[in-house]
Length: 273
Image (cartoon, rainbow, N blue to C red; front, side, top):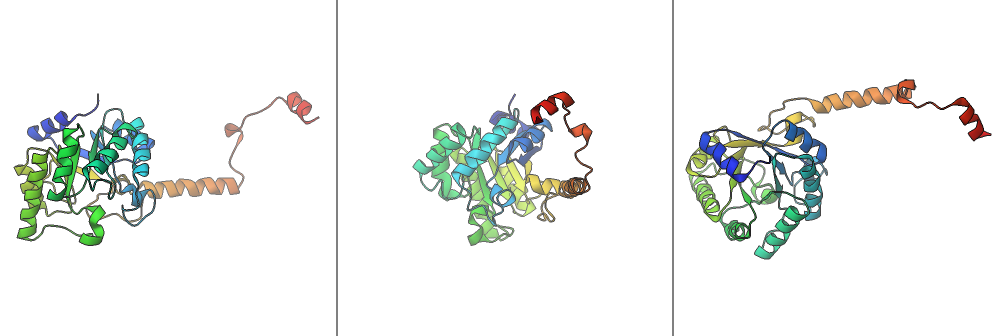
């Protein structure tokens, strides 16, 4: 049975922490779902970790729909959230059109968008039409050219504005809030003020849940952000395996009879006659 918004509310009320992980394809979704992760994010971070861009900005709605559909096919139990890409929700009509594609074609159960009070009318509009919306404050990657990749809201005025934005987004109907690169004491205070769950990334342990990028968690790249914990070094293991495969091919050790199919000698002779 798939995780619901009510399940998330109950987890916050009970003090149960909510693990969330990004997923970008069928295999990653299937593994994360099998591991019991209750919520998956098809993040526009795929622009960097899958497509090789230096930001999320080049990711299109077509990209998001394609990857979301693969993730949904792999995840039977997790609630799947899909990012609305850059500039696809600048108006209510655009937001509805983008959410419709992500939900109808991509199959996600909820969408995520970035921003504070300026997106409150968009959130309200989507929620009124039955679209579950996850909000996102702090460092918002789609605004990285304005903000810079750094911790946000360290000064009192900015911290107050973030708290006010969080409360406004909750009032608008957002079912959860991602807090990214926010000082841990502020994130904890915001989490205590809100009725909806907060999901932290680089925001300390006081949030109601945590989200990490698949590639960072598994050590697929040589380096990871400071806020990530590498739980395995899968990248190095993959490289070792590929080097062994290439060496076996070059040394004529692969394939062997075990990986090959035979043929009756008479049948082969007739075929070649």
